[in-house]
Amino acid sequence: MMFRRFAIAVFATLAASAAIAQTDAVASGDDKGPVDRLRDEGVSLRFVWANDWAGSVRGGERLGATNGGGAVGGADLDMGKLAGIDGGKMHITFARYYGHSVAADDIGVVQKIQGYWYPKRQWELAQLSWEQQFSSSHINVLAGRINATWQFARSTYGCRFVSAPDCPYQLTNTSGGFTGFPYVNWGARVKYQPDARYVSIGAFEINPERRNNNGLDWGLNNATGVLIPVEVGYGTTFATDPYPRHLMIGGWYNSARFTDPELNTRGLHRGLVGGAARDYEGGRYGLYLLADQVVWKPDPTRNTRNLALFGSVTGPLDNAENYTLQSTVGMLWTGPFAARPTDSLGFQATLFRFSRKAVGFEDDVIHKNGGSNDHFDRNEWMTELNYSYKLLPAVSLVPNLQYIVHPDVLGNTAGARRVPANAIVVGLRVMVNMGGPGSQ
Image (cartoon, rainbow, N blue to C red):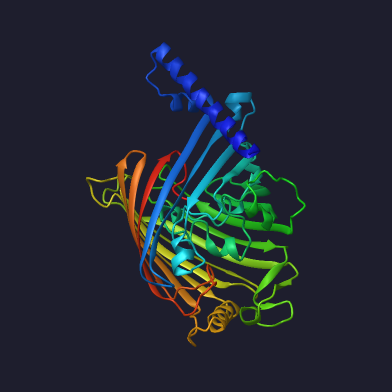
C-alpha cells in the first residue's frame, strides 16, 4: 500500500508539472506541448505499455492461448538544468504487469515467449539511480537501485522482438545471475569511453528475495553475494558512421552460492525422489560476445531504411548450470517498403544448449510422473518472425510467429509426462511507446 501511494504521488507530481507546462504554453503562445516543454526544462518522461497475446497452436505440453502485458513509466531528470549539477542525471522507473504466460502454462519452457509478461502482478520500483558524467575524463558513473542486464551484455536489437531470449540476454540472466528488469538491487557501474571504444565494470548485489517484493525493501539482510561484470566494446551510430556497428566482449564473476540442476542434498536425483537441491559455494564465471552491424541501405545517403544483422554467443565456465551455451543470430529490416519507412521486419533464432544435469532432471520428472521413456534433447531452438506495423507515431502492432524445436519443461515441471513436441505459437503485440525502450 505504501508503495502504491508513493508511485501515485510521483506520477501525480509529473502530471501536475505537465499541466502547468501546458498552461504556460497556451499563455505564451508557444506551440510546444507539455512533454516537450518539460524536456526543455530538464524532465524527460517515458512510458511504454505492451500487451502480448499468444496462442500455442501445435506441440508443447498442451494447446492454449493467453494474454499478458505490462506498463513501464518514469522520468529522467537533468540535474544540470534542475539543480545546477553539471553532468548529473537522476532516473526513476515504475512498472506494473498482468496476465499469464503461454510459455509456462501451455508449452513448459523456462524462456519467455511473451516478453512483457512477469509472474509478479504488482507495482515495482524498477529503477532509482544517479548518473554522473565526468566529461573531462570521459568517465560515466551510474549507481543506485539498478539491474545488471541494462548495463552489460545488452543486445542492440534483441528488444525489438516479442519473445525474450535476447532481452535480457537469457544465459547471463539465468546462469550468470545478472539481475534483470524490473528486479533491481543495489549496484554501480563505471564506464570509460574516450571515443567509440569503451570499457565498463560493475558491482551488483545478488539478492534472490528481490523477486518476492516490490523493490522498496532496500536492506542487505537477504543478499547472498556480489556479481562483478566487465565489458569492453565498440559502438557507433548513424551520426558518425553510415553503417553503424557494435561489438561487446565481456565476462562475469558471481560469488553467490548456487544449486545443482539435478541432485538433492543427499546426492540423489531430485526429479525422482524430491528434496531440496544441493547447493555449492559461490564462484561462477562466464564469457559473452555480442556483435551487430547495419549492412545495407537502399539509399546510401539516407538512414531511415536499413538492414542490420546481429549475433551473439555466451557460456558459463562452470559445470553445475542449466545452460552450457546460448547463441543468437538474426536480422532486422527497418523500412522494408518505401511507403512504410518506420515499419520493420525481424527474424531471430536462438540456440540454447542445456547441461546434461538439466536434461537428466527433466527425464527424471517425466519418468516419475508415469510418462514416456523418451529423453529430452540438449539443444533447443527458439525462432521468431515478426512484422512491426506503425499504426500511429507511438502505436505499433506486431504480429509474430514463433517456432520452438525440442521444448524444455523447466518452466513448468508439475504434471509433465512426456517430451513436448515442437511448438508453434502465433501472437500479436499491441504497443504504445512514448520515449521508452522497445521491450523489457
